[in-house]
Amino acid sequence: MSAVSTLAAGMAYFALGGLWFTPLFGRQWDLAVGLRRPARWRPALPYYLVPLAGCMAVAMTVDHLMERLAIRSLQDALPLGLVLGAGFSLAVTSVNAVAPNMPRPALYAAVTGSYHVLGAVLCAAVHCWLRG
Image (cartoon, rainbow, N blue to C red; front, side, top):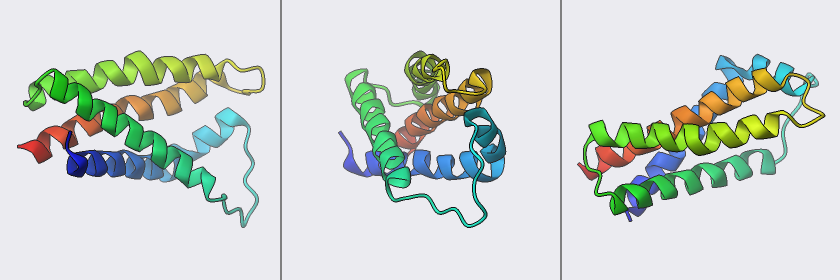
């Protein structure tokens, strides 16, 4: 396994989340979960650390599978990321979305699930790029 590509892929995934859940789809996510942010709201540290750990776990898993499957080309890496993202992350996100306290489950599944699919694809691309 490559620690450098895992760290880079995990950080890229996490950075994508910063864009995804703030300027790109932040309002839709807030609406989906029923969140009304106070004017000076500052999330606590776990709000950042838990997603960072999750991004690193996905990056490590993608790296491990790419090694096991001897994937070296972007042509093979991207479909792996897509299958992992849709088959696991989107599926689990969709199941979690139907929790009784979720105001807009379809919107939550669309916003959050699509982020995780793209994140897994991004991880695969970063691993492929850094391994050369």
